[in-house]
View 1 (cartoon, rainbow, N blue to C red):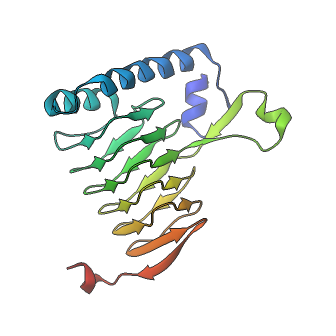
View 2 (tube, rainbow, N blue to C red; view 1 turned 45 degrees about the vertical axis):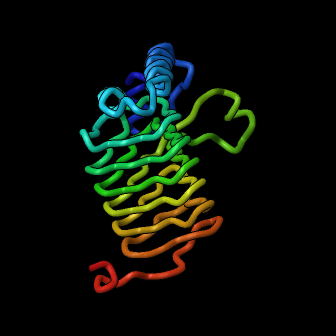
Length: 189
């Protein structure tokens, strides 16, 4: 298996692999170019973000600056909006549903590193996918950790750190984020 195949299978892989580093830097260059486009040039920005992400549409809007590692592993649904300083370490797939809003300074991480210093210094890691459902809002400075799934119709309060799955139809907040309110179907209509 190649290191990329190991990465996508959730296995431990060698991060300094030449092919991975080449792809990583190519995406970083595309993000740098995206971040240099004038903010008022909406069509040009949208065209470029669709070249960076694995799936996006003409309604995708991400304020600059935006940073990601590979880009192609990020899939966003219809009417996606992310505010300033959106950072996605997309070593694994990141899937975000329709009608999602991302506040400023939000980070989504899929890369995992050993807590053992010797293992960590070997430059080997693994990655776990992140999934966010439809109709979600992540408040400012939210951090989503590897392997997390967030259901549909969820609001994550500003400054929260999401370390485990959050079910649909609720509001969660805190560090670590916990469900603080359930939302029934009648409230959403």
